[in-house]
Image 1 (spheres, rainbow, N blue to C red):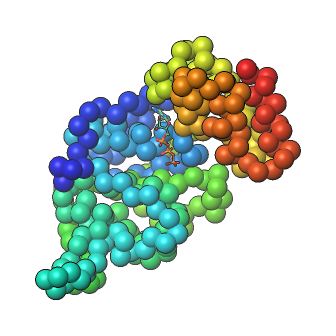
Image 2: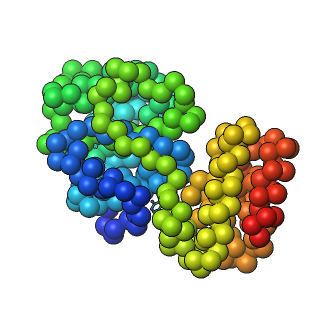
Length: 261
Ligand SMILES: Nc1ncnc2c1ncn2[C@@H]1O[C@H](COP(=O)(O)OP(=O)(O)OP(=O)(O)O)[C@@H](O)[C@H]1O
């Protein structure tokens, strides 16, 4: 578990009282769901909270190939025969870590079978291949996230009903400026311009853009500018080109960049 301990404080700029809310939920070991757009600080928040609570953090980025065995574990064949290897969820439940399943909605449906018993008062993890019902360590907690903008249908009600939820969004302007400046080392003036650009790109959602520029993208643009790339070129690289292939939307994004720099 020591490998999963976070040594130094991860910088996190709160937007409200989410830190106190998370602490209260953790004190009760309530499973937490974080909803919000990509790159808005959910992962950083969990890292910060794990550090604050002094608990190891096991993070799993879920994708459509991830199934129950990837979380729980599997038998491996090596020179000495077969040996069992705990998956990340089992390791966290045994060792008393916070387990963060990022974009749980992407995972295969069979993962819910193993997650559900961990989210009710039993706090157990069925490990079918070992014929074991693992009782979670008292410090174990489950945190999951998903982006409702990309998954309109959301998680199934039977899963949602098991979680307390916190909604995340792009931070308020002042906070986002502080984040961009802190993360990239950019001046407050440059950070302010980039955040203003970010806000403009987010308005394009009404015109068909799937997602506007995330805080992560603004941090990257700032870092490129600090490396000597001209602001317009840096913004094209960090956000215009990655955000869309649609020529009209590309043009609208480029216009927003040109209006900013
Ligand atoms: N409130 C914040 N405090 C500190 N850093 C932040 C904050 N919000 C965003 N960031 C910055 O943005 C980056 C992306 O944030 P993070 O990885 O936490 O996003 P996320 O919401 O987990 O996105 P994804 O769903 O894509 O994993 C961070 O690495 C950090 O640099």
